[in-house]
Length: 129
Length: 129
Length: 129
Image 1 (cartoon, chains in turn cyan, purple, blue):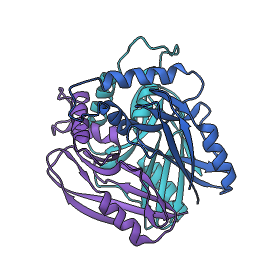
Image 2 (cartoon, rainbow over the protein chains, first blue to last red):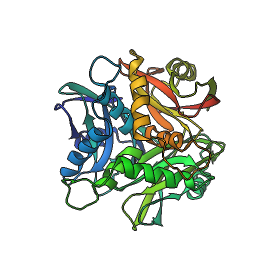
Image 3 (spheres, rainbow over the protein chains, first blue to last red):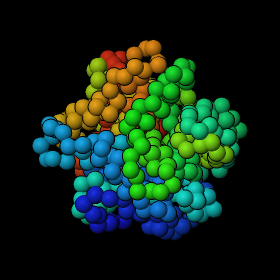
Image 4 (tube, rainbow over the protein chains, first blue to last red):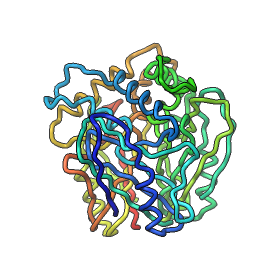
């Protein structure tokens, strides 16, 4: 398994496509899958539009609307971040073809920070078929 | 990796179980996993009830309620479709046992169109264990 | 593929980390991925905070707020449970390193029951890389 670190903003989506792609290329597995796993409970990973940064801004705004500040039981004050983490998910599997990550034209991989700023880890596992 | 195309409605869930199953059977991998990946940013894939079509109709209605038309920043007018894509996800892994896809009794695989009608692609990767 | 059963409450998150870990250890695959798959359409699986049980209570409360009782078309009365199942997902892939499940410090694996109480199944597939 490979991993890398990133420093995140208070709340935001960080494009990690290039870092994941580099690990996939280095692994030379030909064909298979690449698993991106986030070992944190107030962050996540998703694939979405890589061109217009307004898309991820809109996504954060809708998530805030869906998971607002309510009188939560968890005392640390970051319950919305935990919920958002489970909504987008902490694990995603991506196709590997010809020693490279294969994504759709408009797709990028985003680390989703819901409770930053922090130093975060991303775990990447590449498996051949 | 295998793939197939489908023509989608304006918004709706299209059952792709039979097409995915056919690819799994043809691959003869015995036991492993089957990854279904949607290379689009305004569509997704999910597993849900295969019997009563009202279930997926209800799901679309709730998603519309959760992600309504708001003054979004993204100018193409399809921000809700991008958000729904990340909520249901663009990638799912399914079990393969005895050269066949193994699902629960009431489960079907659905392509989720949030910004159609379009011609869409589905990528399927089958990996033996 | 391995599997185990559990008896669930009316609605709630059941920690299945220990059971999944036991299957991973028994499989001796060294390095790879572990797929947890829920063969039901009114339940799901997620990874989240393993320390404070208030986190999962908050999550259930927010999901209820996001997917309330509305005049649904599906007549069985459990449409919200179907929608929640697709929101959290029925399948998750987890990293395996050194013959063991590798999770973040605060992460646990939860079976998400949205329409219990029932006897439910969990399918676990471990694949070496």
